[in-house]
Length: 299
Length: 299
Image (tube, rainbow over all chains, first blue to last red; front, side, top):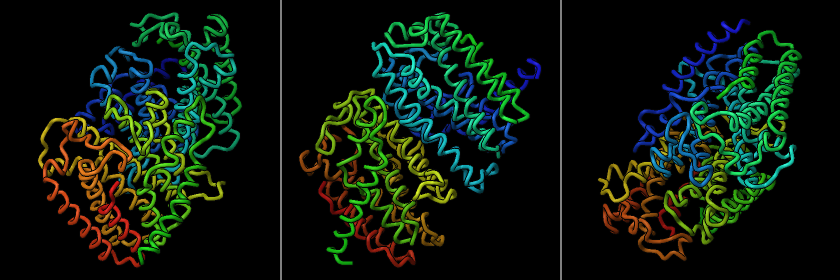
């Protein structure tokens, strides 16, 4: 696939995802809750996770209507985690995607509730009624809910954030740092790939390959985040740069150095491409280019 | 059913529910997260929602293994909402079930994460693998996830809490107060009843009756809560009494007066019994006695 075609694909898919978010994140939620939810998730973000879901669904020749719901659900989980992560009792951050964070704009209580409601909404989106025009087969709904819940929960994202909390000011050896990142960021990125894949029917070998691909880009994403945190300005990132250093958090840069972290990201990029090559699936070009995007991004 | 038999049933079911919670709320979650989750949900609480699930499943001659998972899931959602509700940015409460609240014991960040992980865990519990010895039919998993997500989200519990937040110091007319309570407390209680029912196969008429029963006891529960808040001591409640008054929150007592609120609770008790009588289901004795328990409780 040419880079041009990839950019066209991204643009088209982003429009689809934005429209779906616009449709499913409620305008009508009571007492300002809907406004806070929409502020948090609309009109911002790279939408990497939705793109992974859709690319993986395409590779698996899966049901696109289901994948679009999965794409929205996984982005809702991601966006809720950012709201809670930014709150004063966690990272206490005031800037996100170039805008004031949700608690700065709407207050802490509303921010917490908006995050809570967005986690629930993710599972609402995954379980449409049989009468909806884009109904999803019930067994597929159940598989999607199961994958998402496990990625979001104590074994995944929430568990990773607990380790993150506990590790402030603690030097972590690389295996523990990897475990933290695998949970905190990697689990949801990997789940995005697998949720896309489960919208189709892929043989075990392809499933395992996609799982390996997801694990590789999941870790690469976080390593690149660590690199960007020290090399980029806040304006480029749309969030506060240099934060990890300020908070004395262990990162791949603090453990491996800047060059070591870059080498590690390259190794993972190669691992991701190798996994795709070994999957036996035909349509993996977008997944491959997304892996490159994860490593080459500058924000 | 004699009152004695009802007490035996409650004792037996409570033991089953406690064992299930003990099994499914993880010991091994990282960095103290599991400890906070277990502190929040084990060894405390009336378990009204799980009892409603199990009684409703029995009335619908449903699959008990699935209902037990539903019972645990709904209690996890309830317990997570209490953690977040007690936090300083919300109700700022220090006492719950006679113990220090989770954020007092483990800090605000861990409390928020524990709540977040418990919401995810609810959906993990509802989506067991096919290889689990108590596997649940996938279509039933999907129905349970859908019911729970909608009860927990912006249309239900989270939406009700947003109204609650916005209503502090505002006199609410009775219909708005009812809408707030229907969402904040009623939605999850009603969902408990419907999740139990969907573990079996009930005709539409019975489904609608159970839905009406759930709505009646859901509102009754909150009215009784409002009554107990002004009539009982903190020791009896296991939480801070008189809080609504202190915070100048609208309640059924402030809107209808104590006697008016009591009359309203009696009306709803009768409505719940009438709904059961009209359901055409045979085994509704426990549901009926649970309605009485909701209205007659003193904590």
